[in-house]
Length: 182
Image 1: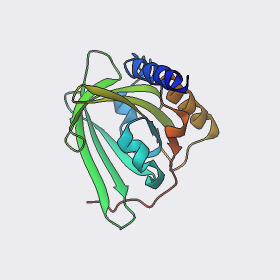
Image 2: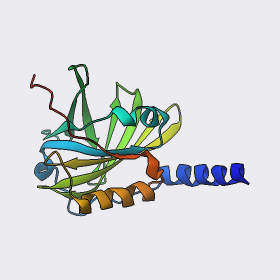
Image 3: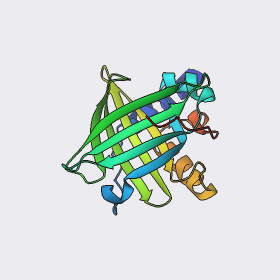
Image 4: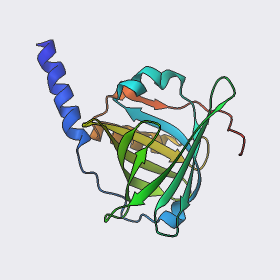
């Protein structure tokens, strides 16, 4: 019985990974551009589950390119004082608020949807990461400040459940110092 229940939960999660979430109706990349703090993350991906306990806030800088794509630069200060940095150019799709990019770090293809955004406060992002024909949902909360409100955290929890991510695999990240500018 327990195995059947676990298989059912896994199937529901797999089906939800492929769910087509609608991007924010009022999405405007120019208004979303600038510095954000990554304040919450969630995923059922094994690498995330194994590492979530040590994760802390980081920054994400969004820049609108001349062609309407999105340059993303992530930075997160590690415990040893070094910085993890990653940069992607997310290409716009025919659907406003949805972008695609390939991650060299994870060697995966990504479809990122801006699910909800209040440009001076927070953004909820849903990304499907696909590697070797395996797709996994990844949820992020960006905030203009290093903290998010209770209301934003509730919206995050709701999106996590809608995406089929197990509640135990969602984390509000503790604050962290920022990486020095390069």
